[in-house]
Structure formats: structure tokens, C-alpha cells
Length: 210
Image (cartoon, rainbow, N blue to C red):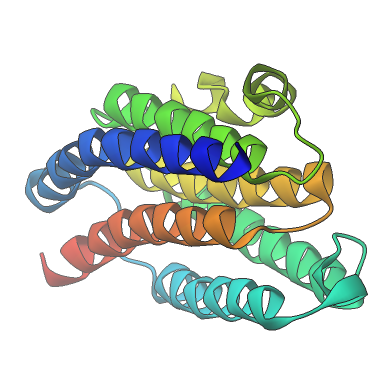
């Protein structure tokens, strides 16, 4: 029964991912073609690259760990979430200080994608959970992470960086909820985080090359 549920869940995840990927393609194209009024910031680009390396290493380390080293309260997890949240929050503060406008054409589609990702990751966590938590309950518990309110204002850079931070928060909440990162969830989480980081880096590189 569990194998069947996981199989059904993975088919649903693949289907949702197939719908999300084209939306990211549109966002990437928009990042390249938008008329920028924001300056390029090398520190933001470095923060994104450093975060991408750190989250990839963290998830792979958790996947290869056993017992207490996989737990949310492990020293590795505590250090990662503390450091990553600080790095991403600092990048957002820098972007807000550099912003010359408080609106972004990407706000609505990016918010829609983030909500889809949040529900996708939450549902996957429930399917893989050893405690058999209901999908609806897990989604409800984590729904606050996919709030779109903070994506309605701010420059394009600010909005995109907030989306990256939100995905990191989704990962943290799932890890806290399950006190583990099942392999299925870890893979989906990493794929989705890398998608948003890719959008953010494309945004910075577009400004750098203009």
C-alpha cells in the first residue's frame, strides 16, 4: 500500500512539475528582456552562488546520513538553516536598498509558481512521511510559507530573492514537521530550490550584461 501511495504521489509530482517548468521558462525570458532600472550587485550574485552550493551540500549530506544526523535538531541542520536564512535575508536587504521601484511585472506569475511549489513539496513530504500524515494536513500546516503577500511589492530582484528564501523556508518547515528529509522530498526540494536560484541568477546576470 505504501509503495502504491508513493508511486501515485510521484506521478502527481511529475505532472505538477511539468506544469511548473514552462512557467519558469517564461520567468527566465522575462528576466532577460525586462527594462532594468536596478543596478547589478556582485554581493547578491555571490550570495546566490554560495547559497546554491550550501543547500546542495546540505541536502546530499542529510541523504547520506543516518539516525540523529538526519534530524531537524542536528547540529548540521541548525547551522545550515541559521546561515542560509541570514545569507538570503541579507541579500534581500541589499536589494531593497538598491531598488529604484517598488513594483515588478513578475510578481503575479512568480507568486503562482511559488504556491504550486509549496503545495508540491508539502504533498511530497506527506506521501513519504513514515508517520502517515494526511496530505491535506501537511499542506495546511505549511501553507503559510506559500503566502503571496510578500511577492506583491518590491523590485523584481527583491521579489525573486523573496521566492528563493520562501523555498528555503519550505524546506526548513518540512524538515521540522517530519524531523527528517525523506529522499523523495529531498530531491524535489533541491530541484525546486535550484529552479528559483536559477531565475535569481539569470536576473543578476542580465543586469550585469546590460
